[in-house]
Length: 307
Image (tube, rainbow, N blue to C red; front, side):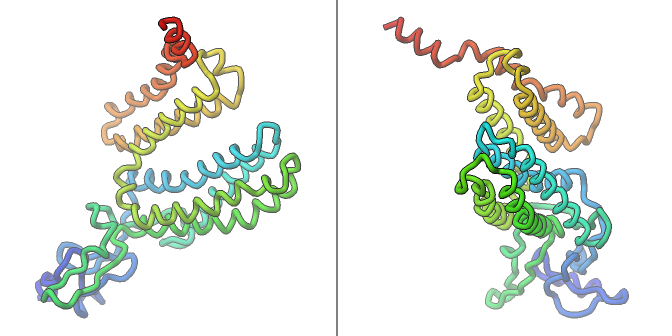
């Protein structure tokens, strides 16, 4: 009888609380870590995240690290020996933040999380689906239906920011002697800009990113690899292997290619999906094979001779 009554709850996310096996209270928002089931009863989320959920969290965790590395490289200068140590420190900051975030999330003290399964895009934007049964009064049932995928990213960014402010200024002050006083802390200032941007991005576009991130990874990794190889004037394998840094950049992009392919395929069928990873070196090989034919100076000279 209780379940029959609870089925009258309006909206997608409103439910009644289950206490000692019986449904109690009026329809409303479910407590944190719970979500309304088909019978409109608030049910505890005890499932483990799927592979795709972990890949999404990995993508959101990579964003600040990649941005840290980019701005450290951008502002450190070619002769600065401090860049490598700053790169390692940024990786440590993000790694420690990720571990601490997992430890403070339910179940506390364990490197795993319980989550509610994402069923549709509206799960990320429950505030837009508060029902009005009588078309006058609104029943507020805003909750984290994708618990904890929405808030865990924000918590992670907060830990990253705190650790950066504790560790990086002291490190930079000691080791970045080759840079001017105004240039030393520019990578930190950049982080103070991009962390709020990432936070707003997750708060507003988290649901869209959840479904689009595999394609974002593939497109951005392809574009940045092409831009890097063009800026470095890499037109042959010999140019590529002359510097270790170029190989590091290449392999990093290959890892991102593979990450994007795995995220799209979700490895549902290993025998069909794993061969797709053979496509990872394709863009770099294609670029090297065709770079000599698209050299701007050659095109310009040929155009000038044509006149």
